[in-house]
Length: 261
Image (cartoon, rainbow, N blue to C red; front, side, top):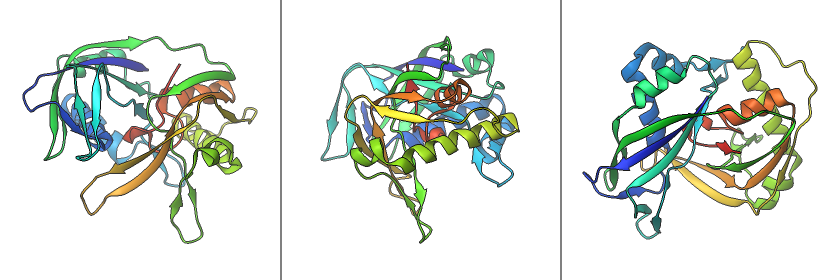
């Protein structure tokens, strides 16, 4: 279930955001959910949908903020909004997140995004549920937030694709993306996927690398590399729905892998 949310900068704190604002935006979603149903938000944050292995999925994703006009201030690592209107998409796979529930929580909501150096206060101007597409086994998407996927190395560290070539063509990337969709299916439906298994991804534009810093400036700071591109996916329609509704790849609840038709 996907929503397009139109935000208005109130101007109270200014018009600059940190470039790495995804974690703060994720925190906003949790706070808004908690304001309407604290028990549900706590369950979503602490548990999500869990596999028997203990792996958790939050099963929602969101796009980057999309202002009408902006400019990057690279020296200060900030994003300056040159227009007051900003469009944002948020998508939930769990059916528990109904239209009435989400619209009621977000309607006219005021919230802040940012850090100590730069913060913007937004007011929700409108929220509209988007109709779901007819899912087939071959579809074309634009990545609205970086797609990230990793593999565990022998030293226990996670390795991400480092180049556009690796992201586009490395077999392990496709294997991990497919396994991630299968795990989400298992977690959401409570049973393993029994249908035909196939997966392919073709990048239709040159992938742009994006190094995102999570919890910047804290002891928990981590760096995640993802890629933005127009892509064609080929996989079973049941898994295509999961990729669209909850995100493709990893870190979806932190704003990775949000796809648009």
